[in-house]
Image 1 (cartoon, rainbow, N blue to C red):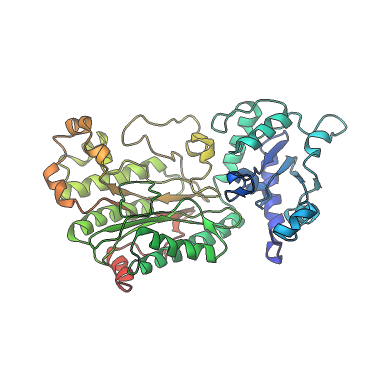
Image 2 (image 1 turned 180 degrees about the vertical axis):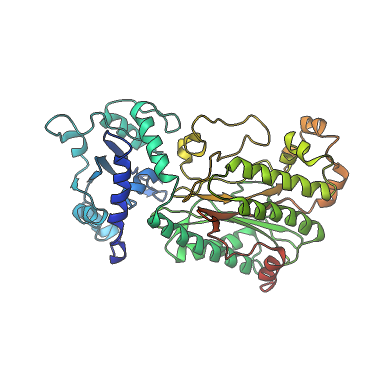
Length: 469
């Protein structure tokens, strides 16, 4: 970790977040950063990623660290690197330097988190926490707090109170987080342009992936999630990159950057490998784009996010009726979830320190209190069901997919036999999957597209690709 003068404003932003937390709860909080996980032997680990809740209040991706928050004050618990590590990792900043950088009120070795006591009780007494993802740290949390921990998706007692307080803070982004999110968005835009440019010379999907991720890495960022770069767009989270790129294919790229302090972007574009959409591909693309644009225009404080999803569903259904793929009244088709045969997932999600922000908490963050997931085919995968408010960052990502497991399901065939023109659908066999996704900041005036410098209209996409093919 390198400490630079550019971090001068960090402590002030972190201080404000801690003060806001203190106004919501009246008990101490201890948050752990977590630790790296061995990949195949102890000294070779997967890249470390600190807990997002820890990052929100500490600001730095410290490994094997904890912070104790109480009444707006922060104590840092972190061991200095042993002298022997200098040979392998170089000089590391000392605990005191890090404490000053993040505005900690005090700093101690990790061992003192359990042993050091105040005049009244141990520091861990009545302290709330959120369980981290790695099993070793979860065990450490339980041992130090001297109590079992519930999963972060179903906390109880003061852990639940803490979770709700943190959700309320992280739902809306402050100036410091927005600055990071804008950087992630800007780099992501350039990564997608690089992917389009690389299509001409790439033989397989991996070549395009490499071009996109190299842009991200060159900015000292990492990818916020495993990149999806595939000619099989019907596989929503494909992580294989061996397929060849052929004329007539559509390439779907869902790639986002993450800043060094954990803030993410999430963008998808779909383009023709040849640089020119076929008539059928263009027809479906324009339906998806119409849903994308209408949903962004609808974003405003006070709007129900589920209503945005249903708007996308209606536009998708209407477009598929116009193309002869579906038949019937649009409202009826959406009510019976016929559109979900082709658009099964939700319209989007929260974005922040996690690309699907706070989904380690299950639906506690994504769903307004008192709301639960629908059992409907067309609503069950909705990740966000809240009223929009200023400062939220959300994705808008309608899509069209021909998923064999859905379209060939006998029950679906029977249920929708009078509403799907299967023979017409066969004409669109060259459209496996299309998704268009942008990151939208909810402002007092509506929605600001943070990733708006990346074109979405088909002619502009074709131009970007064709210039390099």
